[in-house]
Length: 362
View 1: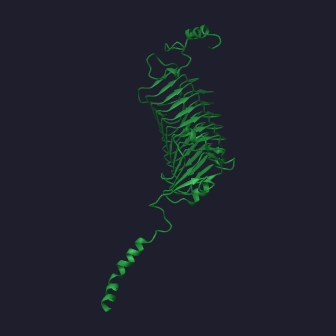
View 2: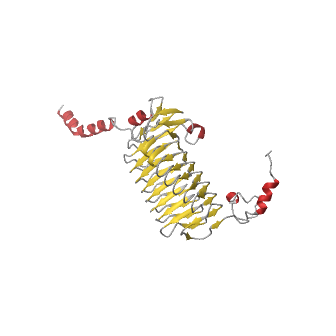
View 3: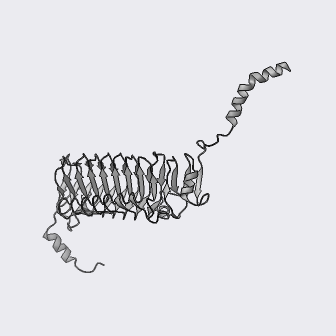
């Protein structure tokens, strides 16, 4: 008996250790990420977010969800059933019915907080009608921000002190009473890739985007049919070190700076096309005020009115800045739609060609 007791005493620490290891780790699902279905498991997206643990996915079935959501600082993914399928995205709608920002992200979220595959609409707020991001850096992908509004900054989205990653998103028909019809950026280093800004408007600056300060990177984005009552139909940049690569600006309009308005800072513009944009006063393609101007390389400004670029800029080479595209110019044939006979000039011959084709289209 005495030998048995001595054995148990000697073995006690090991037994306790084994017992602790075998106990369930209450309060965490770190090793076992769950998928939470809406409305299968919970009736609303916000309730599903509230119960989610880090690493979980909230998967939302196609429907209209009339609510505002807050990502609550959680490293989770909130997505539609298939974010890469446009038919699914257009059928999975979060609508705030004009009651503030549709989505709020202001609790220090990082890139592991993901929002993907939704139409974000019906938002109306002082900042960020569709989505408001403050001192947080989530990943937002395959979302459409449409028909949202703000009285001041960011009809579709407002980012402040954010390094958000925004991928394959569309900003369409959003409105701002001041700056940034589609998107307003204040500081930070957000990244936008493969996004489209279509038909957004601002009463003041930046129908598509208004960027103040910071180091935004914008790559392979389209800006088409945006407008501003004052400056920059598509993109307004002030005191910002913006990097703009392989972007297209077409049919945007403003009082000054039909496509882009530059005010201080050091933007770098590479491989972009500014085509058929219009300004009421000056700078049909780009209006450059103060500072050394944007650094342009491999960039086309063509067919803008009343001029291609007004003010200073840095010519880094291989730019085409002209009222027409000369013969053999690469991939900019539609840059000058008035050049009907494609001879590199807009002249009386183009008018004769149009007259010869006069009549109903078959």
